[in-house]
Image (tube, rainbow, N blue to C red):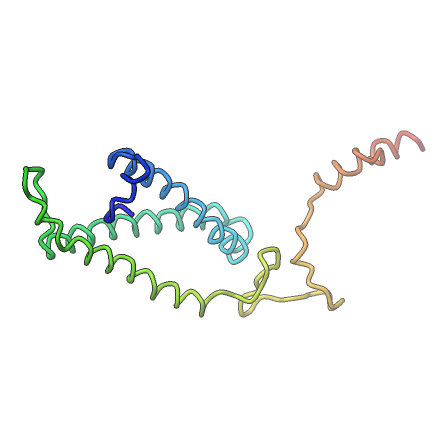
Amino acid sequence: LIFARINLKFGLRDDVFTLVLDASSAMFGELIMLPNQILMSHLCPKGLESTMFACMAGAFTMGGQVGTFLGAYLLKQLGVEPQGAHSESRQFDKLWIAELISAVACIPPLIMMLNILPDKTPSERIHLDGDAEDDDDDGDDDDAVPHTDAKDEEAAAIATGNSRNNNNNNN
């Protein structure tokens, strides 16, 4: 879009269009992280979800920084080094090559992801090798349903009027 200058056909200046693209890419970047967070919450041991989220966020940030440095190196190798002077449009002649490399570089990780994604729905618990899949042998997957603790059970009992305190007072 920005190379073809389509934004000018819609009446958007280059600086406004670039600002909107930058803001929307940050928003979509966060949306892309959601499936990863759900997958990690199912894969990590109970109680370590926040640690795994922090590690994943750190890896995402590091990947962005490495990508920025590799992009700058690629632009330098292709001779795309504008200084802001007049009549230097020749500096951008090979910019399309950098953009093409950037777009194609996303394909191998996508292909690799197809090999590591489990055949489960987001609500199903993923069992790793060595994990007991179903300890009570009743045939159902108990981990597919979220566990409740005593506080949740008490809150449900209070909501229905069947709390332990009410039962004790009625006796």
